[in-house]
Image 1 (cartoon, chains in turn red, yellow):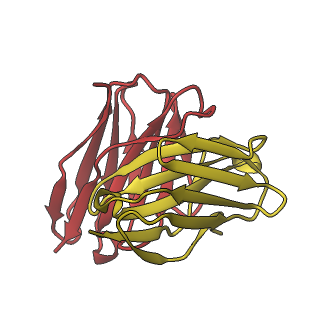
Image 2 (image 1 turned 120 degrees about the vertical axis):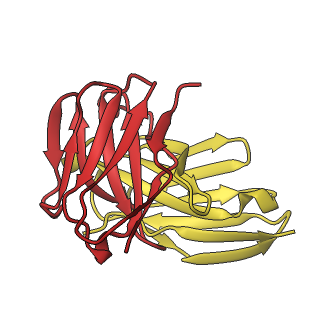
Length: 114
Length: 112
């Protein structure tokens, strides 16, 4: 089945140690998104790629970076994780520039910072 | 600022009852979506309703949209224990197309 896969499901990292979360999709969607979701809160958009075009949200900290080497893969890099970065990170995709199909989400990566 | 806000924050009902959740938003939209999130998991897309639509159905789900009031509702009929989850609305604003903004969600508990 076509899907969005996030690895790993759970990630524990040390304070200040760079960490990379990955997302892959078999849907051939041209748009990929990264959301951060803290406990009992709304998912918050960090950035998205429209094809190869990177779109950063104005309030996304510089500590968060992203890479999309090809259509199928997208990575979230946290250069120096702080305790406040502990959250669920959700990858999502949409096709055709989001023209009425909704997002397809992965299962998320739960990041713990120790 | 957040576009969608859900009401109520939490809802607890008995199996078989109907559950209604509401979402209000602030600006003009292209469409509004509803998602379900089981604990510790990703979000699952339920229904998308476009700004020129007033009502959509999918199985036991019924979504309405009132653009004059900038509000939407999600009705789950004949609820089941498996419907226990958080439900989020998300809006694709006309001024920010392609980047949906999520509300804080309604946590639904369906008791067997």
